[in-house]
Image 1 (cartoon, rainbow, N blue to C red):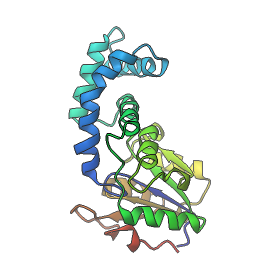
Image 2 (image 1 turned 135 degrees about the vertical axis):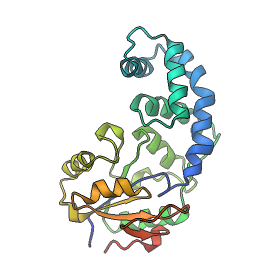
Image 3 (image 1 turned 180 degrees about the vertical axis):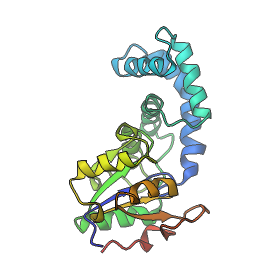
Length: 225
C-alpha cells in the first residue's frame, strides 16, 4: 500500500451524479445558446466552434448549426472536448453568480484534506473539462478545495475507459503503478487502470453494480497506508 498518489473521479465518487445531471447539464442547456451567440467572437469560444465544425465534418457550419449539435450532444451525454469546454465556460458564470455550489460528499472533502496532509499527491481525472473540475472544487459546499490537488486530467489525455489514458497519466506522474490508487464508481474505468497495475477502489455511492474491484461506500473506508 503506502500510495504516493491518488487519482479520483468526480461523478459518483466525490460528488453526486445527480449534481451534474439535475443541475449542471440543465443549466448549460438553458444558457449555452445565448452564451455562444454573445461570445462567439471571443478567441476561446471561436476555437471551440471550429473544433465542433471539424467533428461535424462541416467546415462551413453556422453558429446555429454548432449550437444545435451541442444541444444534441448534451441530450446524448456525449463526452466531447468542445462541449465540455464550452459547458465549463457557462458553468463558471453560474458558480460566480451563486446560482449553485459544487456538491461534494463530506467524507470525500475530509479524507482528501487528510490524505493531502499526509503528503499524498492528489489528482482528478474526469470526463468533464479541467476547467469544470476546478470550478466544482473551487465553489464546493466544503469551500475552495483546489489547493488540495496537484493536477487535473480530462478527455484531452484520453477516454477514461482506455488503457492508454492511464499510461499517459503514469508518465505524467513519474510513479510506478503500484504506488498509485484510482477511485471511481465505473468498473470499466477501473478495469483499464488495473490492467497497468494501478490499484483501484470502486465507490458504491448510489446503488452502482459492484465489480471485482475492492469496494467502498465512502472515503473513510479507503485504506491508503
